[in-house]
Amino acid sequence: MVRFGVVKQLTILGSTGSIGRSTLAIVDACPDEFSVTALVAGSNWKILSEQALAYRPSIVGIADENSLDSLRAALAGSSIEIVAGEGPCAAIAAIPVDVVVAGIVGLAGLPAVLAAVEAGQTVALANKESLVSAGGLVTSLAQHNGARLIPVDSEHSAIFQCWMGWAHIGSQISKRNSAICDAIDPSSIRHICLTASGGPFRDTPLEDFDRITPVAAVKHPNWSMGPKISIDSATMMNKGLEVIEAAWLFDLPSSSIDVLVHPQVAIHGMVYFNDGSVIAQLGTADMKTPISYALAWPGRLDWRPEPLDLSALGTLTFQEVDSTRYPCFALARQALESGGGMPTILNAANEVAVDAFLKTRIDFMDIADIVAHSLEKTKEIHIDSIEAVMRLDCMARQTAELACAVAASR
Image (cartoon, rainbow, N blue to C red; front, top):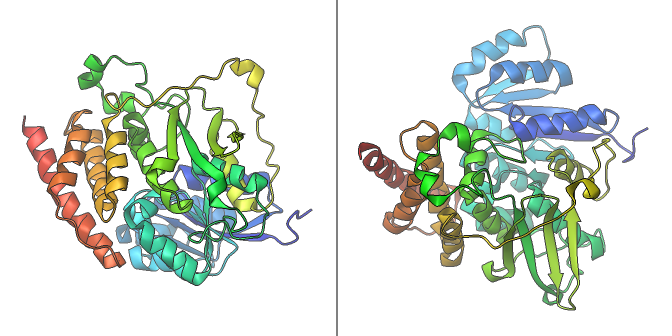
């Protein structure tokens, strides 16, 4: 039986990554609820071809044009349309569907997100870098074109669910995001709180940080994620990026967004109200939960998840973020409060530094130093178009690359 009355059509951007694979797992669990219209990947033509043959979308796209011939050979004999290159792949996001899942990692996902919001789509947004680097641009286009931004990050989904838990569903939440209710008086909210696991080095002595390796850093204690986001979790840059994302999604200042380290990751987010009430969202450490909510919104989907066992957890603990242990988090706060193009610089420099660390060119502790240097040395420009975002991003990457070279030579 189709619960929603119609089969929802999906476009999945970044289908071969962790978000994309988790989304397809939801489709597998609820085959009568969804059909796949389009799949887009970066360069992994082999997995993309396997997905295409399994789900039979109308069109697939691969950003790496060098992989086009291999993809065509793998899909020979099928009627699936194939496109290659960043531009054609971004254009797929504008094809009308019920939900566009934006799961491409990094700023590479911005063109497709912009194409989706310009087309007035409902976007299940897992690409936080789009809002970090171009929050004003994305949200203004979404508002102008009637697009909806449904958060997929577990913490933002938690805030969204807490907010919607007392709001009248179907209204508009914020002037920036038509998925969040206008019926709510924002003055009744004191602040929101995102939680963080603290990553794999939460209890590692600070004097051992200079010996951290990429292999150790990608081993997240709770979540199964790709290498880049795993490193961001280890530095807690990821949580800093999420604070910036929350500021745009929920139209809140930095001072109204708290973060607590919560090792058990049972509570993902909380909304504090002026009357002393706190509404929290709890769930297992499984990205399929927030993905399923984004796909089913404004309803919920029974994909037969493993239930949260609070008795097995026993105790829930919380602590403040230690800026000495997590300097990247403090840099993200600084960028948000400075505003303008500073978050764009922050994101670009972090992507460069994380890539250099994963390639063992720099040490773990160099990541924060390179981001701080880039924030200080990159000349800021006004962000009013995707071209301006890309120009500032390029400038920040150049600054960060030079800083990486200096760090590598030491």
